[in-house]
Image (cartoon, rainbow, N blue to C red; front, side, top):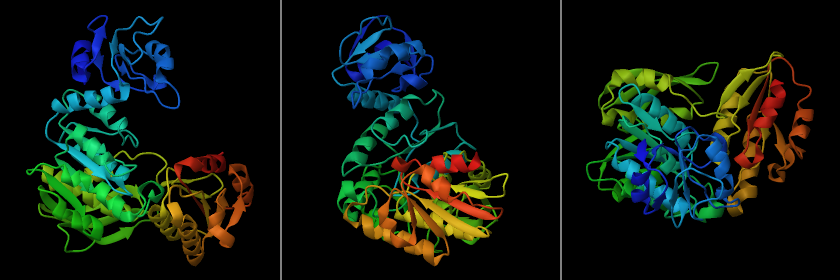
Length: 439
């Protein structure tokens, strides 16, 4: 989105020092600046002001600063008290220029995939902008809004939370007109404390919606379905049950784990085939279809949008090596719900031998040992071997290794027809196992 530097200064309550240049979008990482962007130095573990020169070299046209003008940098500066707060204000100013097709997506699991699928469907009818990767916090969300092209007709923003009140903060910036809640699960309990707090936090999205907006709720999740009482907006439900407003029938998986089904909506029916892998992607597709249909996407456009959606990386990627080994790379993140779904997907593959390389599931709180043990038991019940990387709580079912090299050593006897799942929380970075196997 294009701004004059003076307009940015007015929006964030700052003072412009230098020329009133044109700005296009904003960035916080000096390594990925695009020409014309505003550099926003975030003060965290490292002080982003240290990288302003690199941002200038990368093409930034101006920069925010809470330390006054920086020596040796000739770009226009916008001085503020707090750069992160100024970025939020800039996101709000960008939202003022956008139409009222802004969809917020939250939930304990499935929000990134739902965001990707919805962006694909909306793009069949509207010029659409969506959060990159998992840009779902108080930094990523305003960056998405500020980066939307001037002719944007629809926006999809992912909303994460580290506690009660966080989604309310994001809604104050994005002011969504449609809100999707995928599921409420006992994840991040180390931060939330209990699942009721998770539900309270996720429900802040539907509480923010205007009376003429729409809450899209999972009918198969009691905690999500109950959020219908927390919103003044209209409500449509999605789910596998025929009682949901938007539901699926005749679900089948092909040999690449891609689901097909019959889609039933208030606007008509159609056949769907997904490129996203795993039966657990069906509810995500239903949520996307619900929001898109209500926003005006014709039902006949939904199949192409879902099939052609660009999906974020490290999520159910399926490759076969030259040696005939199938790798299911779902290493982006992990919690008990997504881990269980990934194990079921591995079990559905036609394979001679099935092995799961599993890392830690982080932020589970006091139930961590029990949750890890339950996943190990599920794998054992499905006939899946487990290699646990630096996570003792998978117990005696697993073969334990301390690092990625240890996991690769354990996999040295893989042969044609074997299948390997790689999955763990982001801190485990187990995509390195998948990369090693492919090499």
